[in-house]
Length: 463
Image 1 (cartoon, rainbow, N blue to C red):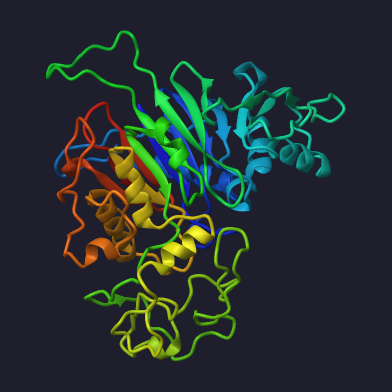
Image 2 (tube, rainbow, N blue to C red; image 1 turned 90 degrees about the horizontal axis):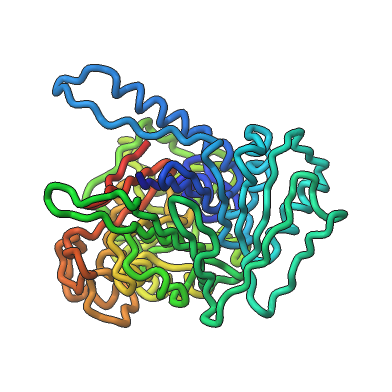
């Protein structure tokens, strides 16, 4: 069984009330792997266990139809054998020392060392924090940090005097002549490879390929299982270098920090649960175009901190409890704003400048590698409040690019004017072995859960 749980899906240097920062829990053949470990990942892991336990217990209750859902496997610490870090930004690695300590203090050495993989600097990062905080595991469990290096990178030494008491000597894994790390890690259930992707700092994408048991046979319909390939990318504005490894992905996890274009006004109104006051609270500032801090971490730091969610500008509130979906920072041609909307490609340019991608860039890469399913994550906090309409816009933009016949897809402006409908039935060149209507795009939330069956599309659940 293969599944992926999203523990966090927000961009930025710190979690929001409604979203945690990046972390994913991959389950292949009874083994767990954690991909990125932002602040609060330990709490998200415990919350995931609680949500799965609640869901499974609810399945025991009788239903009118008599149909019960298949219980989901409960993730156990003892099954977590490896952690993969994509890059050394706070919103991807700051929770690692805490989660590592929690993990080692609750496991035994007999289960083998915890293997950690990441870019240059991760070994010293973990070692320094554990030393400076005088952290002792009080257990015989061990961990090993393996750094993925290029020929120009310095090696972090593993001298006994420098290492933590729970640390084993790690491997220095140099890339091949093609710049890729092929089969850097292998287990009885899957192999892992990696490739460099473009970001503001050295960044990696990981490719997990499942094994097919030798005893597996074709089912009654003649279908023979094939290995599943899960491609999980860190932050990037250009993942082209990893394309040879990612080709034919069963699931591509790609960041979509921004939309390419402004959000259109919804046809309906979003009803708030309670009537807003006529004035915003003193400690909550309306979001405007100004006041953003560029280049800090991975996110525009909105002025409305520490309060979240952001309240609409008082002038945008109505007396009947209707709350608009959009802040002043997001314009529509008919919004009545005295500021003209940004050109369609401006958000793409902003994303690339910051080392990030838009939804359509993610869709274009899914098309390039003939992916079967695409999970969008790492959303900017500017898209608040997050709701189904906003999620569908991200999915629509990605699907437009995925189904576009333009090989050099430059954004939604290429297709919106032609009236192309974002649908899984849109035309395009499908990957070998499946039809366009089988393509899946999902803008994930925290605790989104996808299971990849041996045949057929992925099954998504919101826990």
